[in-house]
Image (cartoon, rainbow, N blue to C red; front, side, top):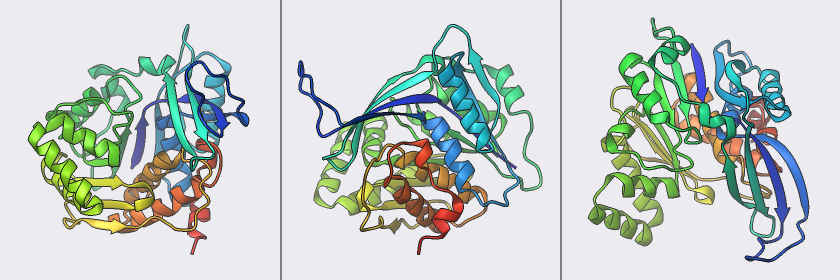
Length: 335
């Protein structure tokens, strides 16, 4: 049994400010911090911290860093959290990926992120490399999950190879930052996790304009009802039908919607109330990592969603990304 995260590793440079400067304006910020980041790294650490303490399954990170102090710091953090880093390579002559993050403290901790991909741009693999990395097929009911985001150049080609050569593996995809993919590529995904913006971007990428406008209108008239229909639509017509066929749409403070082959009716989990939101940077990655850890352990989808909602609610009460991800016991201690 294993979980493999294929994705980005970044060093985050974070500036906290009351507001963003206008063009040509210099504005005094409140503070500056550095953090480990990258959606791939964040999700790997979230899985590591949020899986059951007794789990014996292998958790691996696949990606690239530069030969610099940023890269070594990221590798050390992953190793400290029990993530196998044998497939994280150091690329000579390139920097580790860097994210410049602006957090508006007087706007609910909303963030804006600029990415410099650095060594993440080398996270591209041919068939021979993929055969080596994924060198065993499942047998006897073993579970293998492979997690992707869109901060590496071409995750869809890796997903296509896996679907053809390791069809029993569960492919988890969070298409952030969003890039256009044809419908055929989405059909390689077994577990699709998107926020409200990404959900509409998928509609715009794969459906004709009249259908796009119909969904926009539905959501405008009935926010939750419109996204419920979209969740079911994705589950039936967009994702792969060979494994779990799971779709989760996160709606921020409005909660989450979900459905799957085993849970064909769209479910709804509200967000937690009374939360002091400080920084939303790591919320999505914490939610995804938490969800994967729970599904891999055999939890029902609705229970995994509730656990993940609690996990992300703890993350957003602190500054940072990877460092703010809670542990399994911390989430379990919430009433």
